[in-house]
Amino acid sequence: MALALVAGCGSRKSNHSEEAVSELGVPSTPAVARRPYVLSESGIRFNPPPTWDVARIDVVSRTGEEAAAERANARFAVAFDYKAEQPAHKNAPLFNVYVLPKSRWSGDDNHSDGALIDSTDDWVYLAVPAVQNPYREGLLDADQFEAMRLSVDEIRAALSIENGGPADPTLQAESRR
Image (cartoon, rainbow, N blue to C red; front, side, top):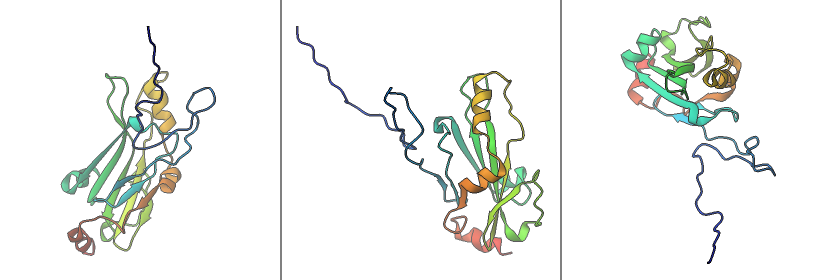
């Protein structure tokens, strides 16, 4: 009887991150920064915190009337949703980002309407973080959601404007109206 052991065959690397492994074989703090979410259409680049489980993130982007229905004058609405692990639970937004033409923004930094995160000559980026945890205390989803919640300052540090703003040149001209 022959017994062959093959070690190291196959590898499943996350396309978002790599993790260091401690001497005990337990993943430790990620050694490499995660790849950012780049949404060229809306001009958003978001670098998720190293503690985030990217398998638990669902990015939902809306444009035009759908975006404006969420936030007046928004041309883009991007939700960074927590993807519920338990099947009976719905996904819930960790935070939303709204992109408005600067000419349509009142200049009011009302946090319930969106905190100013960044701007260009043509565009304003507002963020609205989750106000509360939608899951019942003590549940896995509640703990994971809470660990992934970000403050306005944390969102501001992780989010930047990609290539000067939205990619569509027709929107660039429209933002100046």
